[in-house]
Image 1 (cartoon, one colour):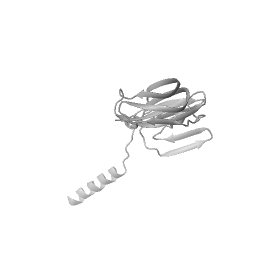
Image 2 (tube, one colour):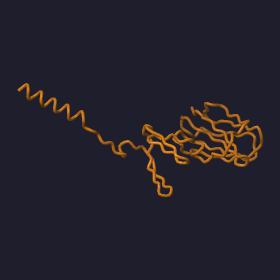
Image 3 (cartoon, one colour):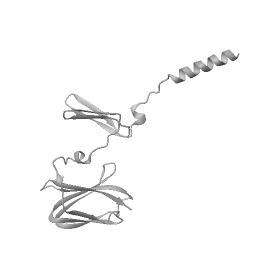
Image 4 (tube, rainbow, N blue to C red):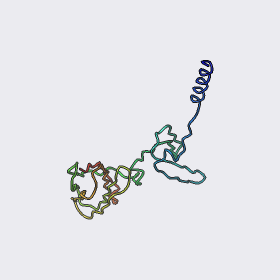
Amino acid sequence: MMKKITSILILFISLTSFSQTAIKKSSIDSGGASTTNGTLTMVYTLGEVAVQENTNGAIHISEGFLSPDIISTVGLEDYTQLAGVQLYPNPAIDFVTISFSTLGNYNITIYDLLGKEVAAYQIKNTDSERIAFKQLPKAVYMLLITDEQTKQMKSYKIIKR
């Protein structure tokens, strides 16, 4: 009897040690999409751990979690740093004030940390602007200031209390 129990126990341990669990894309995917370029189609998801990255010329492939670079995501590759900008207060409660060193036309876009645009403003011929944060929930936001004429930009991380 003891021999039979031992044999069953060894068989059970052997089977469970070598079994594999299949993880389907739908079980770990919290979002994503697919893109096609010529004959190359890539399906990507968000929320996975990065395991490998490969670059071949202009193609960059990353398996797993993709942390988007806001510069390339919003198409600002050719922009330079916008100097002479001040933003206060940070952390913000109801508003932030942005002061520019020169008069100009600026685009101000606010993104949540998932990259979703939550507000956008076009500022014309001014050197200072007050942006309302009162309507936004408490969180951390990315504020992006761009000057389309000079191809300059500046980004800030804003804490909304």
